[in-house]
Amino acid sequence: MTTFNLIVQTLHNLARWGIVILGLIAIIRAFSGWLGKKEYTPADKRAGMLYTMVFDVQLLLGIILYVSKGWFGVLTADFSRALSSAGTRFFTADHLLLMLAALIAAHVGRSLSRKAADGVRKHRSAAIGFTLSFVLMLAAVPWPFTESARPWLRLFGISF
Ligand code: HEM
Image (spheres, protein in one colour):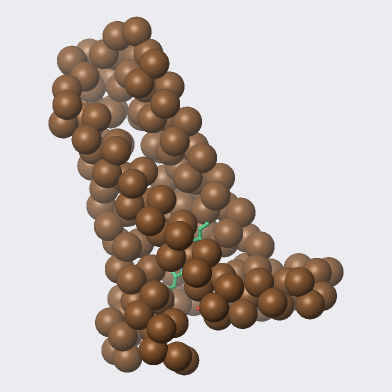
């Protein structure tokens, strides 16, 4: 693997944990605010913003890897072959499309939350949008126990 790919892949691997942690924080705050009928505070707003922001950066790193690791080339060389084999389908299509759907759900949740009239409704929109986003994201990660297994943690040449 080239040094460039190793760096981007390490960042993409680590950012995944940032997204998992920030997503959990945003979801817990949103449900606790919604069910506990709490005020919507600047800290709630920040939690949602951080989750979507790191997710946006992850999209960028992912697109770089998609091209630099050759998945885009595999897809465009033979579309139906890439999609019909389990070995190439995950990274040429499934991972990308599910993550895009997860990112859209997060942005829609945030935008509806911003426009909602009161605190409880703001928390509710955030809770629904972020939970949907989080579930899609978890389903699309190449966890080590899945067919497209990638390491739990990658630090350049070292991986666990
Ligand atoms: C639409 C956005 C995304 C695209 C285009 C994308 C693309 C990719 C690509 C091309 C790879 C490299 C596969 C290989 O080893 O050849 C990869 C790996 C990976 N992706 Fe994504 N990705 C995206 C979003 C995400 C998100 C949001 C997460 C997690 C929150 C994520 C988690 C991972 C993980 C954990 C790996 C394995 C990294 C490693 O090998 O250490 N990806 N992704």
